[in-house]
Length: 110
Image 1: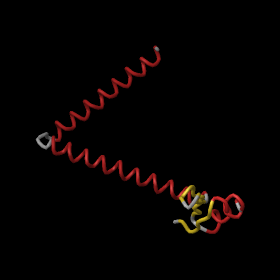
Image 2: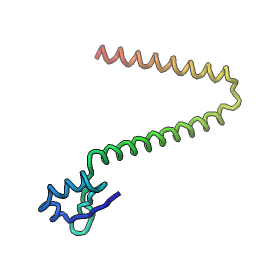
Image 3: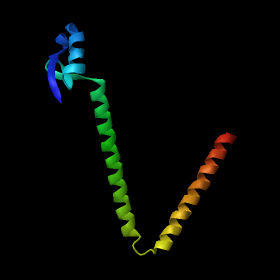
């Protein structure tokens, strides 16, 4: 992704040109300080693309975690009938609703 590298001094002295380069000419400009990576300059479009990629990776990770939980639960509950499993789910949902109502009422009283 980095198409250009500049020193911190060059970035300071030619800030407008470096920013224009990051915005219009390349994907990103790496600014180095004493030869070490210091900061990246990217266009708003590139930043948006990076954010969307990051969000997609996080979503995929959550789905993988959910699938693993479902696999473990399926293994632990392989002896349950579909009806018994549905009853447990409904009971858990109802208990959650009751707990949410209780916390909401406590919040109003406090």
